[in-house]
Length: 364
Image (cartoon, rainbow, N blue to C red):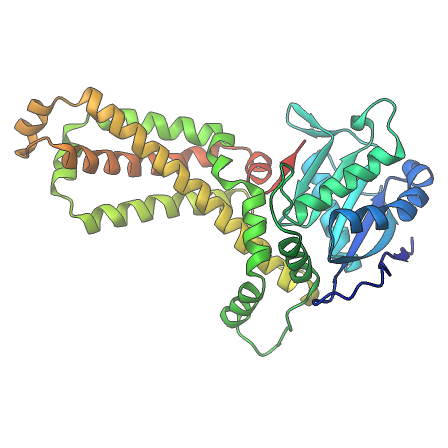
């Protein structure tokens, strides 16, 4: 259907030092829900959005959900919503569906991806007696996740407005420009937006969500900790070699997760180039930070295991080095690096949808 448009700009008469950030929000309705909620949301959302996100000027459009290619799960619905957003040229999209949002054994009322600037709301999951006001609140909440609003408070309205402005502003696409130069301009012009995407993803929780990777990594660490050959290597390795080992191990796990789960995207048309560039950058940073957290946790666990299991006299006899704290730290770093590499093997065992959901979605 042809999108219906409604300008949500406010005319309060106030003169702001900085122009309001214009954001185009698209709402995609399941056919059975359009008659119940479409007109109500078009009437009530502009004022509600303006009150929650001052400094942002809203334009609303609506469309019907495409039922010809139904999604199988919550992540599929989210990605379909994002694809429709790109097709329509919106800045943010929220799908309002009558399907149950299922991901594995879990069901959700809402699933949002800040890096995709898209979200999906399941009306049945909001409650048996779902009111129109409750649906409107759910839409505003999903938009808040995209704009990096902390549900527990914090974050200035100016920062939210600046992120909205970066989301809505396109970087000039110069056809003759190489990929490196274009990427640098996109990232340089969208720093706040990019950092907000990464923070919203909560990358420090990535390792916890990927249970198989963490299990394999911990098992690798335990098995290697009592290997005397490893003691000899740790005592001989220089700080530079230890640093390189850590970088290689973290890079291997990051690459395994991104490539294995198909997290890297290619723009299908010129109009998607900037958004896909930001998505890939946010994905890489999210996964990398998550892997760094994993590595540090494994290092701490390895240090505790070394102090508990590695006898100082035996270590000295095997390596010829005094088993002081420095030697234990080197051993723990080496074991943690190898355990992180073991995590790359565990990443290959994860379901692709599990990795994608862990990397860039928030669910309620």
